Image (tube, rainbow, N blue to C red; front, top):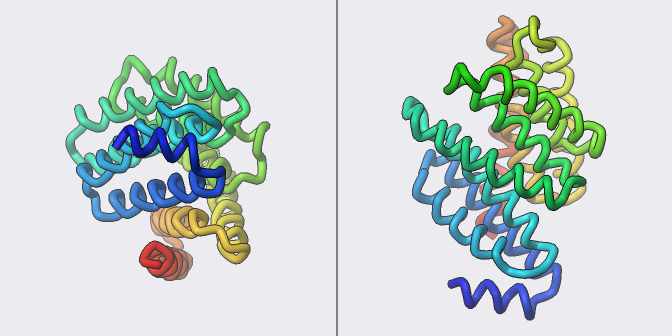
Length: 238
């Protein structure tokens, strides 16, 4: 498999490589939807092989490999030791990536999310990783204020952060709503990956609306999430 991927990197053009990454990203989302750690691991293994190949695509492959770890942490459920290990991998790999590609806004936003989420599993990490999460998210916002992946991660971080440490649920909700609309606009423009983001953003909004007692808004958001999910499954089948 490695030889095949190296050959692809050497012989195929940027469009073919982008298509390969696109397909692997969709496999990550499908694996996450099915809560299949094995499927996520298989997609990640291919991404790591692609990340070892020369060329610009290697950085994006490394990002998606770390993203697979983030999804595995979310899919781990009650297995807290496994979730912690997945997040530690995610953080280590993204630290290396942003050192090599400091302008990678999505990597910085994901690094912020992984650092923030890891504080749920380690009291000792609350201060150091909590501060690092906010630093990385601020830099991601500076680099790409209109990137829907960045906006969504930023909103989720604001919601999860206690008000004492700078969290703001009103602002978080506004960011998640903006992310959902940015993803929807990108879908209309023909982006396949934006559909997965739209489904996730509307689902996250539904959870927050429900927590706030806004049941009507929650139902509408779930309907939007379902519609986006149906669209992504149809796209993936093509």
